[in-house]
Length: 284
Image (cartoon, rainbow, N blue to C red; front, side, top):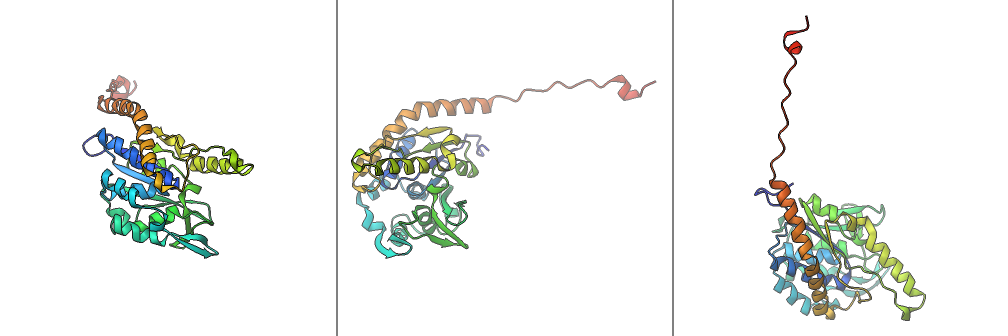
């Protein structure tokens, strides 16, 4: 599972969370400054957008610049139809303008987006095909955004089936997976009884696929009560990602150090058993 030069491969599993997902930029920034290589990324919903951009070769400064000038109007338009209230068709054009036109397989860093089959309830891993379409499918919240029809499937937001796709990162080749959870639930007393319902939905999505349990390290920025919709809070959201990643950085270094040390230890030699005399010459 290790790379050709023997190094432990590090993968990221970036969870969904709409505008909260800008915290992923802060996490990437800390890991990059710490010279921790990122060998592959699996992303769900907003995690797919940030992951795709990074795997396409955008720098941290590029991502911060895009965050500063991007809001809902750049990626969506109102839509009143049976399929939803907002269309994300503009998201595809926005991605091609800011990231480029790619097939998922052609990215500089291996990447996969996670979506959900609305009919079967199955997770769908999108590791090939048009990148912007894969990401749009991963972001299409059912009932709010129309689904994406692809290969006979009706695809919607991956957060329904696997919000932190750790095992997908392993399928991409990761030996060590760092997950990022931005779906921290919170009670909102001002919303009355709806507060408990919203917190319950947050909890269900957060644990969808139980990917958090499969991560070697889980980074959890303090997002309790923060809006999912205010892209204008990008500076604070990025900073929260940086703070959470810095807290986990010593543990990540320690774990990777142990794995590298274990890999470099020679395998124990097994004693060679002497054959029985009778087995060689036959019993008298």
